[in-house]
Image (cartoon, rainbow, N blue to C red; front, side, top):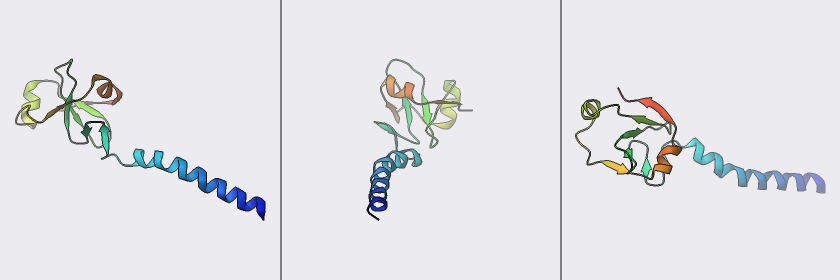
Length: 96
């Protein structure tokens, strides 16, 4: 009985440590980068490319200004994030 109680306690402790890591993965609308969330338009200061951050955690590039303006009214809402944070986001493709 004592061994099964110890095993049960160990399983509960392990679950409580591992579960928060899965909670972040399971919520795609949480912060994708420290200063951006799903739905934001982002760029890094070193480059002019603008990306849409999707709920799937991927970034989608606007291939040119014409396509950008067909979806957006201007650049006022674009958020600058670090180039390292931008590079850490997988590229999902291009906005068309």
